[in-house]
Length: 59
Image (tube, rainbow, N blue to C red; front, side, top):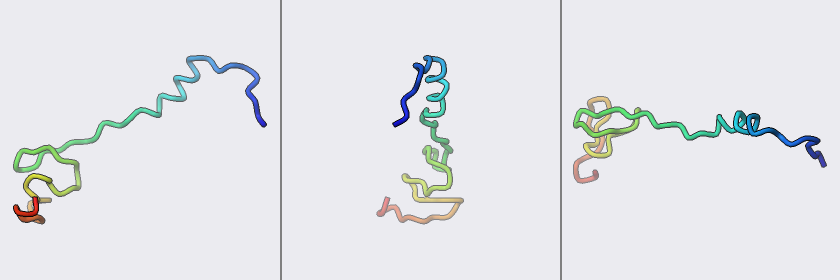
C-alpha cells in the first residue's frame, strides 16, 4: 500500500482544499418580486419566461 514519505504542509493541504468550497447559488428575481433559481418555475406565482405553468391552487 502506498504510504506518503513526508507530511504534507498546511499550505499544500489548504491549496488542495480550496476547490471544495460550496458555490453560492445564483438568484434572479421573478416578475412578482420573489427570488428564484434561474431556469426554474417561480415557486410563489408559478410562472416561467412570462408564461403561467402552475395554477394558484397548485402553488
